[in-house]
Length: 267
Ligand SMILES: [Mn+2]
Image 1 (cartoon, protein in one colour):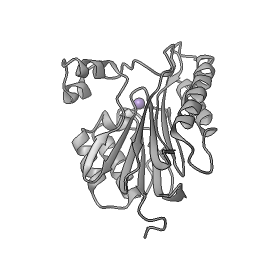
Image 2: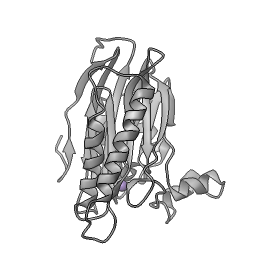
Image 3: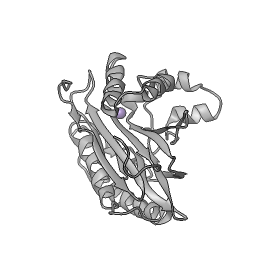
């Protein structure tokens, strides 16, 4: 495999935490149009987070890095109670928001960033993913043949979908598709949404920036996730498909295979 110019990628990493075995890979590609990559990813056993910065020059990059750095402090050696972790994440996001609001942007645009992803936690003693989202990056899951977006975008087009004015397919090409309604920084409210979902016996998680789902339909994403290839190839195929479809934005993917069935899976 040859990396595209400017692409950052991890090898497949393996980890076990709280009875959940995981392997994951992350790829971040600047795309075909943008000169810089303002996306960032933070991964570790039980922590898969992504931030998509905005603000131009290096402001967006600094904003996404600041958010991920703040969240790295939440990470512990064993999964903690979901409620406790959620409160820590809220605190860290508030700190990151203040730091990002203080970034001087040369472009005159305010620095900001989205954040999404999952943290492995326990709920009533059972492994659960704490899903977090602020902005329009996304977390998807494929489990038991069922593919779903775990997050709900904070975007103007999502509001139009909710109101019945647009279909998801219309929203994907609507000129207002890049208008987000919540973010860290950017003069917005740092209010993240959270979901607590049970870890499944076998599941695949995808955390991505809008450079992926802006170029590909959910069906296209699903088909690639469902294909039975190693996760690094799966991540490659996702990024390649987004680039082939135009690559108009930075595209970042974190692909995770997780299982609660076997603490020593045959990977
Ligand atoms: Mn983006």
